[in-house]
Figure 1: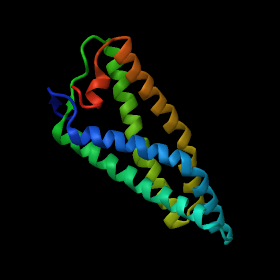
Figure 2: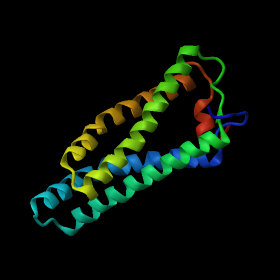
Figure 3: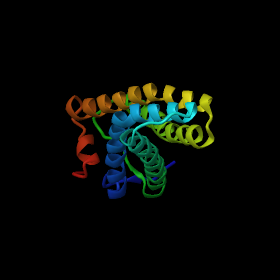
Length: 166
């Protein structure tokens, strides 16, 4: 279990959080190019340079998601995490733990399955990779909703912590 930090998230953890958010947004927009590049590679057909560039962007950004997630987990273990805020029921803390665990699992599984699919040419793993997208979006939505409820209903200040305003 990670140590508890009295003064909020580490600066590194905050930066990585927002980088991962940006990376996921990029993946949302370049997804179709990756699908086209995958199909072209499997069928041995040509695609335009823009689609190829966006497809490789998807791969590189996936590697960045994986790297940022691993570093964020390591930082969380080493530097600790802030205590769950006062003012919210205990069940919200448990739900936050579950949501974060699922979120980290998906942020590791998505790029790993994508890399295995692409560099190994494994179609079944590509299907798993694509199937994980919807659960990732659901967990991200729950994470956002939970943060908003914590901030505006329970008034715990969690949003201030993740933007570095402790």
